[in-house]
Length: 251
Image 1 (cartoon, one colour):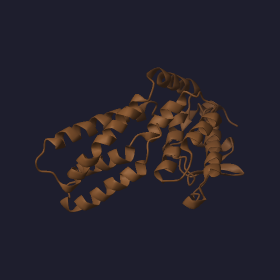
Image 2 (tube, rainbow, N blue to C red):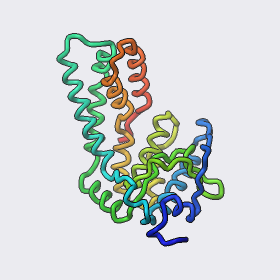
Image 3 (cartoon, rainbow, N blue to C red):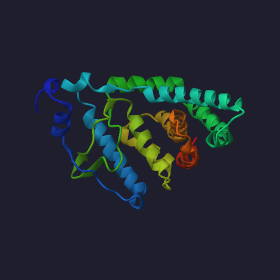
């Protein structure tokens, strides 16, 4: 292996046993069970252990996203409440806005509950640990992008960033949840914490972010950017679908 100071990130992970692939790993939704999810969690943890040691040429170009997801969620929650307050005063509502007002109160409450579940002191310790360890997250750790067949294989690394390893877990387990898979998500969080060898305090953060109604908020934000009145019915259906995808809170 060359000097860590003059090696690219891709050369570094390849020299440490991760292979790049120009194809994705296809997996049928019906084949995903808890055993398969736990195996994937171990692969994610193995990727993190390798990536964590990198300190070469690309360090200055790798994005730093530490703390950004929680910050974004706080902003989105405020915007959602502001939008709801504005529409409550309107006497000329569209079909989508009427449906939104019929559903938004419980979503706003859920946002507040999720964000309130994050302990500030624990969160700061997680951030400090991540910065000390130079944790690098992949962004997309789902089965089609990261898998193991002897070696670890990786299809797309375009979203790598310095971030808390908890965030890759949130995205992976959150995607399992949004796909309406019948899995024990609390168990998967525990297995993730064990595989990553991080403290149990991370569980509060992960449960809060996985429970956050991000699909609903994304749909509302897309509607706000929409100017085509002919898409009203489609957006109502999308909002209903987003509620199903967000599922039940686990806090």
